[in-house]
Length: 91
Image 1 (tube, rainbow, N blue to C red):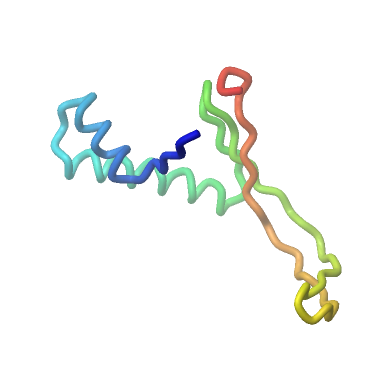
Image 2 (image 1 turned 30 degrees about the vertical axis):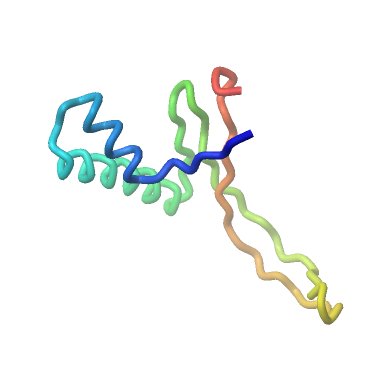
């Protein structure tokens, strides 16, 4: 099985090929879309993209952790994490 990493450059190249827009406009378009998604997640909102999936912000509580090297226990602070749930169509 071969793995391929999709980068911003790949997305910009695809946008450019599909739309015929100049590269700088495609870069600005991608940046604005990603900024909108990240701003919404920072505010704690759910981002749903039809036929793709949803990005959700979850709150993880405080818990005990352990350094595997020294076996020293410590408390892990509560934090917010982003999770992705694929749509049925993507599955």
